[in-house]
Image (cartoon, rainbow over all chains, first blue to last red; front, side, top):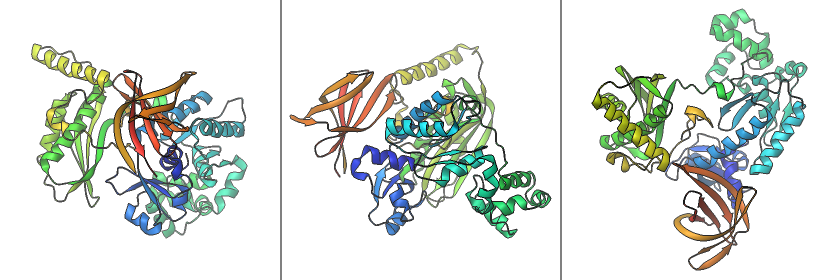
Length: 392
Length: 81
C-alpha cells in the first residue's frame, strides 16, 4: 500500500487530501509512523519526531492514528487478495506477497485487478511489483510508487540490478551496506560479481545468500498466511501517552498487558514456560528481562506474579516510554486439573474470558488496571489479519 | 480539530445489499444531511459489532457509529478543518 496510514486518513478526511500529512501514534506522542507523499517531498520520513518534521515542512498536518481503521482495512484487502489466490503471505499490515504461478489470468491483468478492486473498495492506491521471486517483486513494487505497477521478467533482472544500490534490496540495511562499502561493493551488479568465497569468508552462510541477492536469484519461499499462524511467542507492548517514572503505574501497565496476553493464550489453548518484560527508556534504550519458570503458566495471575518478580529486581534509571510483556516456549495445554481448588480457579478464569468475549475486554478487569485501560494501542509488526496474531 | 461527542442520535439510513448508508442525522435538534461517506470500518466489542462511518456534512466531518447489537446510532466525533 502507498503511505498506508496517511492515505487512509486522507480518504477519511477530504480536507487532508493533497496536503502534507503525518500520522503519529497518539495525540501526545511525537514519533511519525507514516507520512503522505506530499510530506515526503519535504524529506519527512517514518521514525522522525514531529519537531524534526515541522522543521522540514512547517505546514505539515499531524494526525493521531486510528489503529482499528488500519487493521480493518488490511483484513479486507487480504480478503480481496485471497479471492485471487490462497497462496498469499501477509508480510506486514501494508505488504503482501502472492504466488501467481499456475493461475489462468496473466500476471499483469491480476496486478491491475488488485489495484482496481482496492481503489473501488477503499479509494486507496497500491503499488504492485511482478517478478520471478519475492526479492525482485519487492524491488519492483518500490520502483514506481505511488500507484505503480512494474513487471521485471527473469531476463530483465541482470540489467535492472546492475546499477541499483545494494541498500535498495530488501534485507540489506544500513549496517550491511557499510560492511559491503568497505569491500568496495556499492551496486547489486558488483555484489553479484564479487567472488562468493570472499563473501562467505566475511559473512558466513549469509555471504552465499548475499551473492544470490546480487544476482537476483535469492529464492525465499512464500509462507502462506494460514500456515504461519503458530506463534512462537505472545506479547503486547504499549508506548505510553507520556513518559512515566512511578513504579506502581508501570506495574499497572504490566498487569493490563498481562491480561491481554493471557486472554490470547487461553483463546488458543496455550501455556508458556518463559515470561519476559521489555522496558524502553525515554532515551530509546531498550532492554528485556526474562525468566524460565519451573511450572508452565496460562492464567493471568500466575503470569503476572512471575513478571512482577522480574520487575521488582529492576532498578529504573530513566523515565519509561514503553512497556512490553511477552510469554514464549508455548505449547498446547491439555492438562486436566486434579484438585478441586485448581478446577475452581480454572473455571473462574475461563468464565471471565467468556464474559470478555461476549461483552468486550473491559467488561471484567482487575481493579488496578482500570486506571490505565484507556492507553492507546499500537499495531505490533507481528500483527496479522487472522490467527493468534490478530490482536492489537 | 476533533471533538469527542459520544451521544446517541437519530439517524436516517438506507440499508441495501447488506450495507448501511446514513443519509441524515439529528443532533441537538438540528438535522444534518450526509453529503458523502468518505470511509467506513468496523470494530468489535465482545459479540457486538460497531460500524463506523466518516460522514461529510455540509460543514464538518462526523463519525457516526451504528451498533448492530443494540441497534443504536452514536455520534462519536465532530471534526472541523
